[in-house]
Length: 423
Ligand SMILES: Nc1ncnc2c1ncn2[C@@H]1O[C@H](COP(=O)(O)OP(=O)(O)OP(=O)(O)O)[C@@H](O)[C@H]1O
Ligand SMILES: [Mg+2]
Image (cartoon, rainbow, N blue to C red; front, side):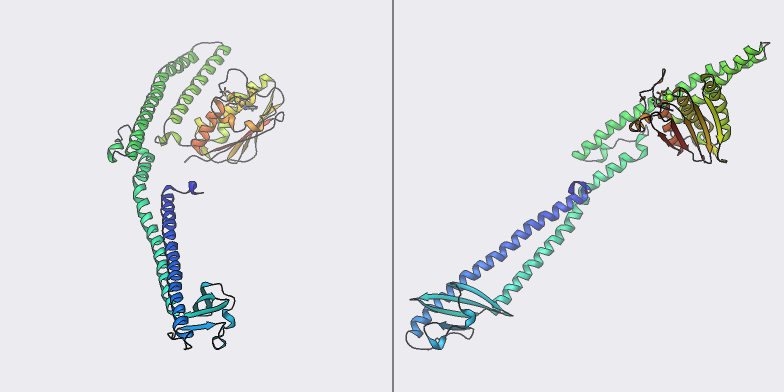
């Protein structure tokens, strides 16, 4: 249980616990010593007084000369008969309480007769109680002081750790020019931790920088050949070509446009949200769906699958067309790949869409895993890498969409994506 507490509280608890144990033991030993001394001193004193009384008063036939708080009883003298309350006490020192009163009773057996001195100890008991109250108050005060001191100490000890955690968590740490952390800290364990963070953060910064350069290089380098293909297609479209050839040129132009959009998608995914303009919504669900339905519907028909698009609810949201098309295309491509016969449906709802197929289905235990990159199911087809669904998942996370799946082996698969309109 202790291990689950925050570190600061653990230090505090240890502090207080230690004080409770040490101070508790100390207080208990004070109480024990007081009791021990009380018993020994008082029994010595009473024993001396009893033998003096017996020797100097009782044996001479005098009345015992005792102070007002002490009384003498004996089984051998009817005038000093032992009251019932004191009968049956063990020999030696006894402490008796009745109501508010407290007595010491010292018992001695001589020749089969019992002699006893009873001393009223109210005064001593009052002093003893006062002492115990002081000890108890001291104990409580020590624990309270330990709590306060522990709190201050724990805060002081943890302050640099908390500060370091905040600094590491701060986003600016990934900035290439962020200052190192270690110089802010003394050269102790925390300083070493800060130095370790510096070296790890340095590596992270380097690889981020490499990735940034890579993505911008790729997009820069791909853009030129794509532009060349696109302008060649435009020129070709104007040339006198047979209808079949024109059709092919149009397909090349479409594929080129798709490729340009995909490069854009990957760039946007690689970048942070800093480039907010890339995330604006500019297309409706229905228009993106229609485009995808035309493209994938034809391929499904070729494979002998029955494809239909159905609209169950009118949606008015505007979405980032590149992202929405990539998500839909990946789910439709999977439906095409993993369905041998039967049907595929693209169903548009209000703020969501579903893709249902009558294919082999996905075992329940794989529903989480298949969204991981490079994970392919048992019925994987063709040359895929297992990246499709992971891309879908990353896009959905980035856009605040939710992708879920229902499937039983042999019972087909239904992917559902809940959309959130782009800002
Ligand atoms: N509609 C579906 N029906 C049955 N299984 C599916 C379906 N969609 C995905 N899967 C399973 O999930 C796995 C992961 O899919 P994902 O799209 O991530 O990768 P892939 O299709 O194997 O390869 P890639 O998409 O990279 O070309 C697939 O290998 C397949 O086993
Ligand atoms: Mg796939």
